[in-house]
Amino acid sequence: MIEASIQYRTTRRVGAFLILSLFAAGAVPLVASPAPPPRPPQEAQEMEEMRETLQVLMVVSMKRALQLTRDQEREVVPKVQQVFDERERYARVRRDAMRDLQQKVAEESLQEKGYREVVNRIDNLERVHRDLEIRLRAEIDRSLNARQQAQMRIFVPHFRRQLQMRIEEARRVRPPHAAPRESSPPIPEEALDPDDEEF
Image (cartoon, rainbow, N blue to C red; front, side, top):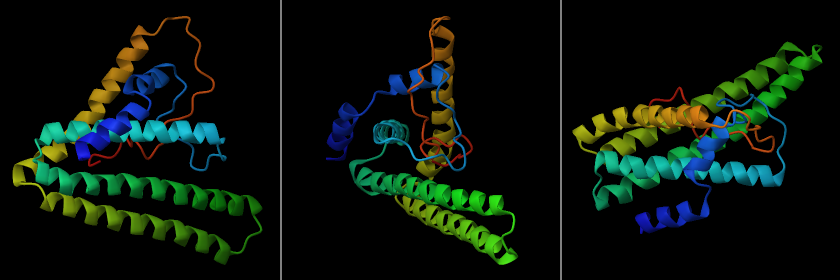
């Protein structure tokens, strides 16, 4: 059932090669701005498709690298998806909080209490997010044997390095006079965090 769901979603989403091509075209930054303006519906849909494609690629590669059993897949894959969902939620609420912070800093005449409230909000969002991720990772570990836990720590940075290498290869083979795609949306920052060594 899980395998069929992944295959179905893969056929509905933009292929991995398209993502690599967007990177290679120079139109896709790895890190988005802290508080970007609202995006048009079509661009938001394209970003969602790219995010899901990256997630599917990671899950399929993880299952192969860890050699998960069917029972383990039923336990691990939903937890990994929860990590992805939590990251998306956190990125969204943090963008809103950062936009609020930027507006308050621009006011200049704001009282100390106003600054402190929004800073505390951002800190609390980060704390809740971090605690939830730690709990989800512990639940994933409980479904893996010791060797698989070790392999998981190796898998994610390896996966990211391989993806980055393919991006660089795509850049090198790009025609020299090819124009960048102005309409290409940026990769969602929560979909592929280069500083994250876990997921």
